Image 1 (cartoon, rainbow, N blue to C red):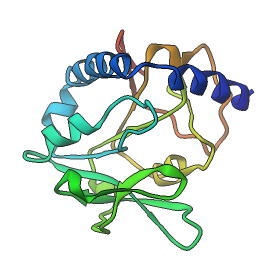
Image 2 (image 1 turned 180 degrees about the vertical axis):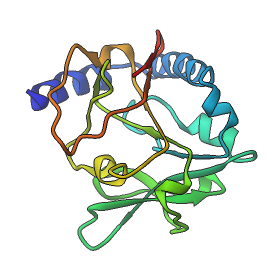
Image 3 (image 1 turned 90 degrees about the vertical axis):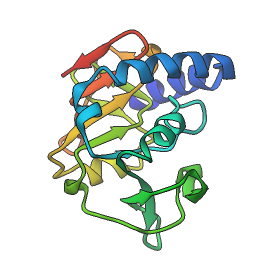
Image 4 (image 1 turned 30 degrees about the horizontal axis):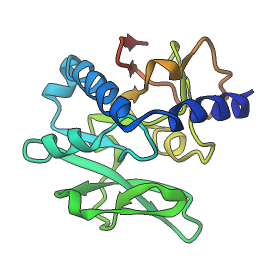
Length: 183
């Protein structure tokens, strides 16, 4: 079931025109900024958008002067662990394993020192569950995380219900161009 959802939604996302990504991402960013915790937080860990994901580059750029921003850094020989690493410039971003944009510099802190984590996903349900690419990066890093977890998605990425396992970490909010879902 997860694989069928992945394939279907990834196909829809792949077929978005660049103009659609820009318009929808701007609407999603505007909705995200309506969440008070985003505006009052000092520390945010966010993915770096690629492959028609909801754009986070504009957010990162606008936040860098006033907040401490963390982005993924992939570590270990098997590239199976991700840690949050501080970023001070978009110039620090490189494409890493699996095509994941990440920082090239390790300047990591504990995930629990971060107030908000913005999480990518292929699909979300309104109970906060998500389907990613199946590598488990975010489920592992968020396992004991106590901050706010926010998923960004286009409205077509919201499905009725996802089967979740004990290792799946639900979101606190999901933000689309149409709504803010508070779980």
